Length: 113
Image (cartoon, rainbow, N blue to C red; front, top):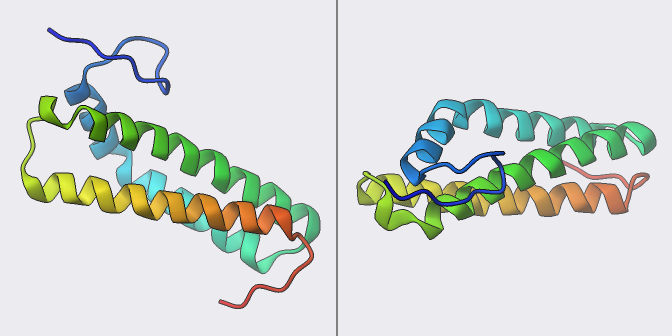
């Protein structure tokens, strides 16, 4: 069995195991990032910085995992539709990380919905 190293885990993990983990946690991870971004958008100063940093950290963890999965896509037992979902999730998480960094850079600015 071929083990690859993923920085998100403290042990070596196979690509199918990482995919199973992501499939189990996908909804919770995406919802958590969206929730923190929404709270960062509607708050100011300290709360915006707090929720923006939460969103940035969660998004970066997702980006790390998704990049690992997409770098080892040949080892995954999936179809083209699943791989497309992974690419879309990666783009969404990068966009969320950029938005969180924007909130952190401007804690007193007004951001419309």
